[in-house]
Structures are given as structure tokens and as C-alpha cells.
Amino acid sequence: MSWNDTVALRTLIQAVPALASKTFIVEAKNPPPNETVKVSVPYVVLFPAQGMDEAERVTSPRSVTNPEFTGWAVGGSAEQAAIILDLVKAQLVTDGFGVKVSVAGRTNDRCWFESPVPAQFDKSVTPPLHYHVFRIGWRSQPA
Image (cartoon, rainbow, N blue to C red; front, side):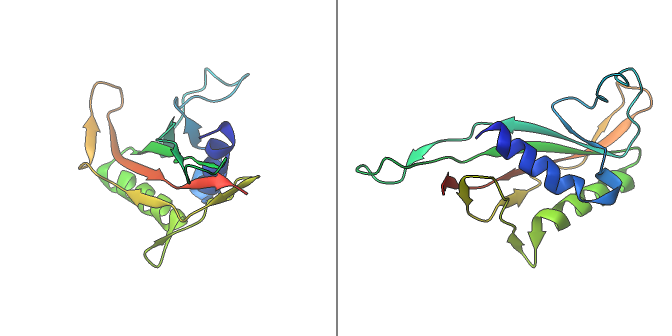
């Protein structure tokens, strides 16, 4: 996984009008000089992970990477969080098939998408937030 994978996924999610300026990496925080401005719901936070690299063949110099991301679809209510999750999924999955995330210099398989845990409610913050956790990843090799 590279930073290019992260940027490509964020760009794809930001194509959803409601998330155009509300898709963040690791922390829901506005860029300077507005970093003190509180981010309002709804928004998405992505947490990149390296995934597991693998060799395509023992004799091949090509290696395959498997970028993975955990994300939060955050809303002010359970309904809003569910709608955001649906919008993200609709952007990444078409007719039951994951899209191919375009990354320069890479050939990617279709992505996979899952939401493995029930909706969550965080009342340790004010105002309380509802969120859905989702995971996405794909198999990637040099072009």
C-alpha cells in the first residue's frame, strides 16, 4: 500500500457530493488555517493499513500488494450514519461487484467491501455520534 492508494480511495469517496470536503485520513480535522473549526457530521474517516504483500511467483520480480482500509461513516443519528454508509458502498460497489480503484502505475483487481460490526454509538463526545465501521481493500500489482 502506498499513499497513492489512500489518495485514490479518498478521491473516489469524495466524488459523493455530501462527502466532497468531508473525507478524512485518520483524524476528522480541517486543514490549516481552519484546523480549529469543528467538523460537522456527516463525514467519513479512513484508516489505511499495509495489508499483506505477496509474491506473484517465486521466479517473478513482481510483488502483489493488498492495500486495506478501515473506515467510519459518521453521522449525528443512526439513520444519518446508515445513509452515509450506503452512499460510500454505492460508490465502491456496483451491481454487487467492487469497482477498480485507479492508482497510477498499478493494475488493481476489483475492491472488496464489508461492514463487519453493528452500528456504534459514541456518547463520550458532545454531541454523541453514531457510526458504521466498514472495511475495503483490493489486490494490486505493478502495471
